[in-house]
Length: 485
Image (cartoon, rainbow, N blue to C red):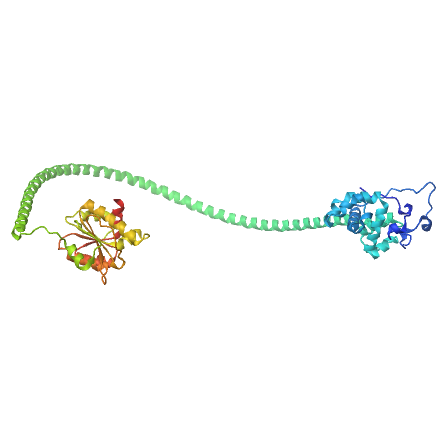
């Protein structure tokens, strides 16, 4: 809403001390402090005439509020109207924005407050404020600033200054609109030129594409002619093939008749061969019966000869096995180690091979202890590894009834081991000898012909025991066999 106020010329004169040098002070030389008599204006009979103020342009109104808000905190507290005292405490960026309605209303309703604000605003404006008070506006000055100062100072001709400012603001707005329209027109022209350039490029592409399509169409027509010729040639070959097919069908019919005749002859020969095979099977069965009788007689003779040889040599049952002698001479035993039979192995990790070898009579299973435990459960401590392997071998010995010997390196021997399971012999290599050497001694001590199975993934151990007639197996075969049981 526009700010309205009566002319300053009709304001009542106030005490110079109370006004403290504001515009209109009798001691001040400012032009707007003139009395009606000094200004030459004749006061009409009956009191001052209040003329309506012109409508302020929005930029001028905002500038008036901003100037008032800027000087508001500098006024003494008793000179600030009550409605504006709370606004004076606002932050500078909020004072003009939030207090604009209250400031505008107070400027309209309180001429004395406006004079105090004007005094400080003109002091801050400097030469421009002095020029506005004199009723002139520099050509290079901002029209909005001139109009705002004129409204506050109210010099002679201030309405004309405000009107001129409004015209200048409107002219600037119109110029800005015209400039915007020109800029938009230039942009549209630029876009149109760009669109024309793009259209030309697209047209060139389309012409190139049309030429390529025409070229491809010519190629397709040529290929079509070639395909037509090929089709005619194919149809001719098909007719010739049909004729040849009819001829071959006649030949096939004749050949089929010949084959049928030959098949009948072959069936006759097959019947003769089956009869001969029946006679041969009967003869073979009779011969096998004779061979079985001879074999039984030979085994019976060998058995009786073995019994007679044992009686002749007066051999008593032995309490020790070959491995026991090797253990006494070359190994340390933590406790009792009675044994039972075992078997010989093959160079494979298949647990079925291990079962097959352990099924042989009087087999002896020799296990490279740490080689197996570190491969199967190396995350455990050595004591736990030994205990788990010996326990598993005890179950295997109980199942198969074979002799089982497990060998550990003596350098890490632990005293106080629990008793070994029945049928399992536990050995530690002595100082200066490794478990590999002790295993080879055990194999060499066995009689020729006895199945000895050595479980170790050490290639040197496997090659050494193989030369002495043992069957080497990988550690995985025993681990998988123990896991299965």
